[in-house]
Image (cartoon, rainbow, N blue to C red; front, top):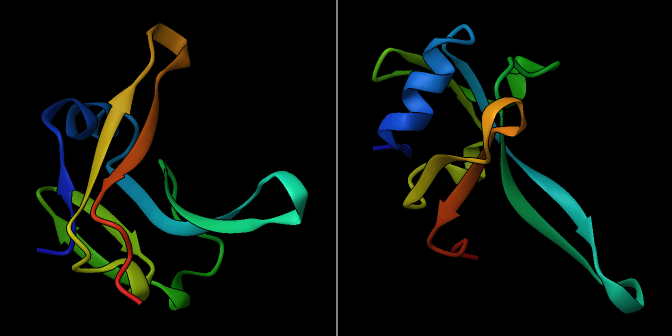
Length: 94
């Protein structure tokens, strides 16, 4: 399995077109540190050829190849119009 979706994330995505992109995004920390975190966007990527495209539980999933099969899970948090997806799971294997 490339990735897992919670029931509420799946429902939320289905209401928004059933497309999600899971990718690495740089995050800056204190003292100039940099970390790449997995994020989920409810949209297709600008450059889809850089991603693996899968039909996963009725959702079109674009996932960065380095994140596939890493035991990740997409879930939903927030309230009302402030809801957003987040990625949780095992740390990346390097």
